Length: 248
Image (cartoon, helix red, strand yellow):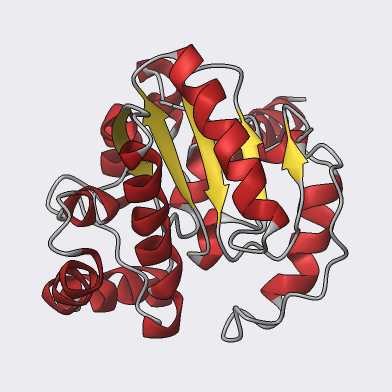
């Protein structure tokens, strides 16, 4: 009887630990197509999805996700050795990325924000990688760099129209950090998009209308409207869609 009780306790503990920071991933069409893309992450240009305005709730959930103390006590999903090495390799390319971004955007200060993960999820970052890891994430595959750099150019065009941008707060979110903040698997882990916070909800609505015009001209592929002051700008997302709000 004691043995059965002990076994049940161990299984229950393992199940809770697995839940950890990885809760709230969400499912949906976006995750289904992302699994196909994940088989060939080295080719971010293989965008064969048909354009549509279908909603993608799976990507809607990760906005400003943070990990509470009770979740941290159970333990975050930790990176494997290769996952940690990928993050460290990207960090060694930080200066090269910033230089390339500055040259392409006339020295935009948003380049510095791109390489810094969401400040509101700093506790999740520490939970994932530990306190000694620099709070920077740069995709090690330099072929992905064109996506956030184009996003900066898009923001420059939006501000030229008087739209007030507050900050960029997400670019590359590798696994398992992406899982720990509740993100879907097919967007930020491939470095194809950024999340942007605007000065207000009304400014985000103005930006959304302009982004829809850009999407119609194939300048970007996906837009996520979080129903707040934040928007997802998917310059190179495989799934070409909008969610949260439809264009037009």
